[in-house]
Image (cartoon, rainbow, N blue to C red):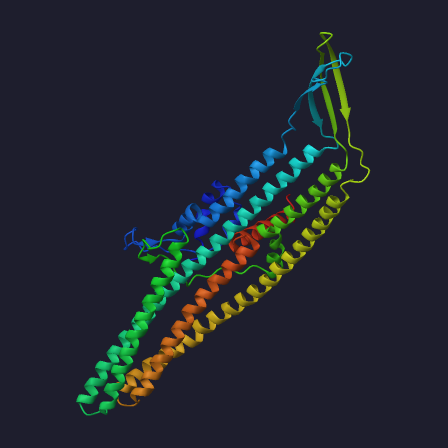
Length: 445
């Protein structure tokens, strides 16, 4: 059972500043007590390693730190300017007075420019935080899917090994029948070919398992897996929430929240450009020293640009268009998420039905057919090819069942990533609301 481990990881994620929606998989894990802990890897352990060591998450973290610097810089005041000037210093005319001026000037921003810059930077940092949350949610889903790949291939190796064992047993039966003269020698050759093909399939299945194990370990930076097996079961099922309930949860997806922050930041940039239209004032004060008269006077000046040509109209127009672009991007993201959700939801329902048909009808029928033909072959009622065909059909359907289970788990991961909420949490919230509604309807004497 693979779909609930993320609930145990919720506290770990919250402690690292991650939204609760990142606990997006309800994969339940059953650990085998008979195997040493060093050789087993649970989904919770895999997720912890990824969240701590994945380089993609480190990149997203650096972006948040960089935005903190942008926010800090946006709030600082302009530096004052010190100027020193000397007039008529080299003049030989005694009627021209020589003097030196020391002036300190300060630019004073008007129109709320500084607060507008801080607001833009703050929203930029919040947008980076949502991008970080989306990346963490993506990495959790990728890790869960890679973990499912390992479980699927472990099961496929088991199925192929069982099939090879049955084929070897059938070969021994064929040898006995050939030696007893009940079957032609060609059947012994066919049996050997079947065993050889089974060995090739087993070797390929083991190689596939090694590849997906490495793929999982690479998510936390290990080129060589340090675990022997993944601990869990594919054959675990959850109650699928109602379509309308899930579609409402799409607004909680970090990608949607990131788009909302992008719109808010674009609106703040429009306000900033409008504030930049207001001219700033520069005030200066200082002293002027007359060298010939040995006197000192105070000087005071004020300057302000005249917005005759440049009224920041181009930057304001660009900011307005960027705002419209951000709104269009949000509509595009919402449509994309909804389309992806509808596709995955329908596929999930189809996968559940496929599993039920395989489990309730196909597998029992294929197993029964194989047992009957195997027993019948030993009694001489069926040919070797008929027995081999029944065995192959049983093996193929077992393989299809494992694939269907893995596909079911991946679809749950995909939908939980889209709605940013585990199915179990949605079910609990619905039950709590129903209980509250029922309680409100009860009259207390």
